[in-house]
Image (cartoon, rainbow, N blue to C red):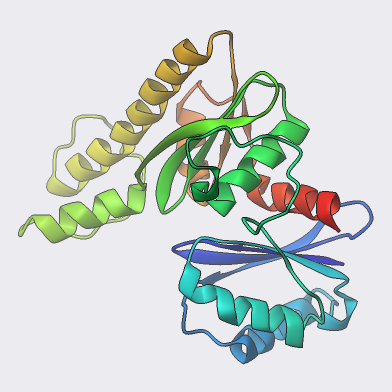
Amino acid sequence: MLLVINSNNTNTVFGAFDYATGEKRASWRISTDPKRTADEYAVWLTHLMALQSMTLAQIEGVVVSNVVPQAMFNLRDFCRRYAKAEPVIVGEKGLKYGLEIRIDRPEEAGADRIANAVGARTRYTMPGVVVDLGTATTFDVLDAQGNYCGGTISPGINLAFEALYMGAAKLPRIEIRRPARTIGTSTVTAMQSGIFWGYVGLIEGIGTRIAEELGGTPTFIGTGGLISIIAEHTKLLAHVDPDLTLKGLVDIHRLNR
């Protein structure tokens, strides 16, 4: 079994994949906490794996994508002590990705964005654009050869809701959902409409500009924890692949194991 770990600012996802075929067997999500110890990861994961008739002893390799530097020590410690494997860590020197990172400072490329690019290049027609809706809303752009050439970063949907709540005395904390009508007739529905349709507009507006700069017709792929909320309300996305980041990590492990 290959254990895939994608540690982001809000959540950390652990995925179990068949070591030979790369087929997904299960995945589990936990809130990201830099103070969480290797022992805590082990106890939590052991119980969840048992529900799927799996054990830590079945792990043959581990690959990690992490964007929270303070969490890296405990994740690495977990891999060594409990998974009994030296992890492949995205972003470390000497790794192969099967593509070129063509940005001004390649070392600044986020591990999750590299994984998105690798996963998209392997599975979809290039040029391509990965739209990732998570803590941040990011666009990862690949050229016709499948090389990573940059993108955009915007605040995520949850951050936008939180900013409204924190910055305006009379606005409540509300649920993310599509309102029945664009014109809100209450504070809550007005906020929901502004954020929901605002992000649909953001995705379509930035996507259109990227397509114009790239030339041709890039393939747009949606991923991330919040993609299911938006995907069916825009025609921009040709594919929706919630596990794209994990799949990209599987590909990276294959290239480097």
